[in-house]
Length: 336
Length: 264
Ligand SMILES: Nc1ncnc2c1ncn2[C@@H]1O[C@H](COP(=O)(O)OP(=O)(O)OP(=O)(O)O)[C@@H](O)[C@H]1O
Ligand SMILES: [Mg+2]
Image (cartoon, rainbow over all chains, first blue to last red; front, side, top):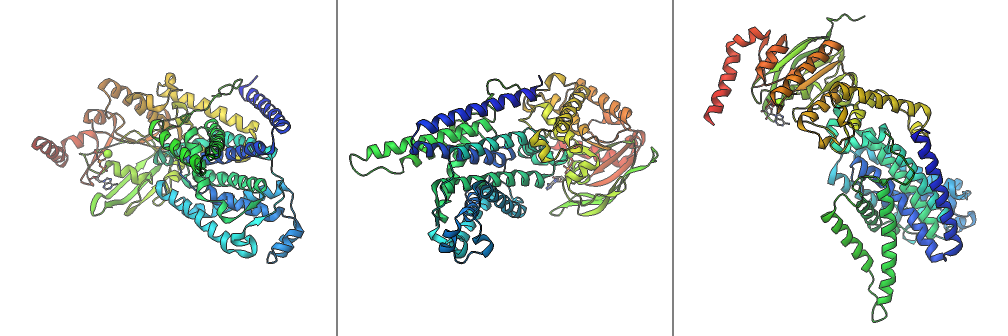
């Protein structure tokens, strides 16, 4: 059997296994744990897609929160029940008022709009590299937030949107996580991905060997934004309420830490980083409340520990847990 | 049908200044298909600058470059590369984390690229083109005698191997013009001789038009029927090796450099 066919079958087997595990979780865990599990799926989407820009292409983007916000607001405005829209959004355009889209198209629309915005801002922003690019994408987050705060008719400003249909669950988030991993993996192991890695390794040599720099970086940036938008939509319908401040730098920071701890340029590393660093703070939060019995609760402990962990990884194992390598899943074969 | 003596590269009064420093000035060249031109000159003469201008890495301050009848003066480096101008760098530039094979795939893939949806769905057409790419990469590795290093990261190759891999990367573009910037620098005499034989063989086998920058006088005089000499950004002599060797200005330029060294 050819390597690619074999890997495809093994991959399908893993997805089936994942489905079984999710079903088991669904039937045994309570809502609190199911929600954590759903967030793990969302964080996998965010970390794996961020890896495409920050890990593989070497463009250190900090725009995730902005793209999540765009995806979340778009999907929310599409999926809200019509009655709710007429009551809470009198200023909304008529065509939008009449729509109560199902979750899947709303999510896809959120991703597409985020990608569209990425394509627009990409042209000026991707002229920059390194710190400059990081700062510019951070600026994007600030802009999106200001728009969300002031575009009252559409976003309800600081009051935010609540009462979203609670349709997001582990099936949706892990379904999208599987799609994200698959798409990113296929791109990375293709001419597109090699061009991205070439740009990261030595952009001048890449250009001298025929690589279109802007197009390559733009592709990574927009695909990454698409999945961040999807993740925003999934998250909005999990929490069921969003405000402009939901999409703060803390989210971006957490995802960047997951990426760095897992190892930039490793997809399996990203998955592991996302799982570990979603579970760890949840565990620590229980410690926080447990410690509270003596006096005031020590909130923020988990954030501090995550920040420390990031610093330690940067100091002692800069390449992250996986160091840019992939964990070979049992049953898969190396393709030349 | 183009004859073998058609002009491939035509450069007119090319100039580049870096904040007042004239790195190259009024440089002109007409290169015919199949030629092997040597470019020599003391340190800082502007040889590498010439390659940077020809490949679009740095924009010229004056002059015009025509390649295969196309004005490429203001084209981006990747466009020029895809038109068929390939180069190696004086200081080796590879993708250190990628294996030798993967290094070659990047320039090889410029001529065949599947659409994104084909990549994501792994269509038979895409898998076929990937297999063809792998085959071509192995062939190139054999050309530069690096088969054994196919799966080693470029960073782990010896210096001589890296130089050969870089040459293979340039060939992978399927170029019509090959620019080699001191390809044998830092090699021992045996390695350097072997490399020069390889370059001569490639040139003869594929009628590959080549410009070779080289410090080693003995090598370049033996290899190139035509030589240009640069000094302080200016073309001071041009001709057959015998003419160049006897040219007083050339002797002066190199003597001057020798004296400068002696004075250090
Ligand atoms: N990017 C740059 N910025 C400023 N000056 C430069 C730049 N590139 C080259 N120069 C200057 O231009 C002149 C020509 O440099 P160039 O590298 O072309 O010389 P070269 O003939 O290749 O020398 P060598 O034999 O040492 O490689 C030198 O004085 C160099 O310092
Ligand atoms: Mg030089």
